[in-house]
Length: 334
Image (tube, rainbow, N blue to C red; front, side, top):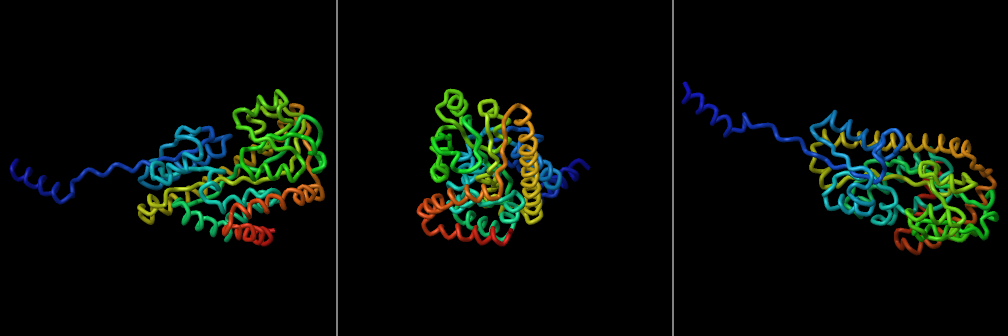
């Protein structure tokens, strides 16, 4: 009996019928935001993605928040190399897919719902396909970093004329330098880590960021005035290594795609909450907040857009056609 059982067991093993099930594939998901699903847009998106994927497939998702694997530029490089399968980034995408930089043209989107309509529609689909061809990264969904607004210590800003003579810290990105120049201010590129000291010592008079970033990092304690001009709407890109994605079976691909869309939507919701609650919070702590009228916003747009579009068209070369594509998509969405 022992010999028969042993023989049958060996035969079954040889046929693969008694093989131990393969261990689930582990997927790495990285971003630079805090690991806080209640307040962090990317943190919330990552946790939603993980729960859906693990609940509906054999994949396991390991999260690497708060820049644990590096800055955004390093994350997209890792994704391209297949070292990290999923990353959620914002500004880094335009550095590897130049066409994505058109989303940073100031005063393009009048509201978040219009931005969502453009990104989730034909324009967004075409941009995703273009960036996939350029980078090997598949954009599964768009999240949201939010609208950026000006703050300063000197005076209330209602029109571009009020920006004259004021020094504003900007990201070390030429597009932002051109924008502030066009508005009449004096742009000063300064690293994020040096911003609080620059504001405290008067190296610059003001800065620009989304409301949630301003409040959560205590910048409202260093500034007296905020103008809700929403000059740039920043999108998050939830991207995956396409070679890895194509290796999945169709059912698993569908789960990953669904999880990404829900994750992007969650990120947008958290960002909207951070903005709405942030405006009330900074006001409660003494900051003066001004919301420009439609006519005043038109003045900002007319000052900033020509300079930026001219500069960007020169940078994009053949990809400058994406400026016209975005304008057309925006008109259709509105």
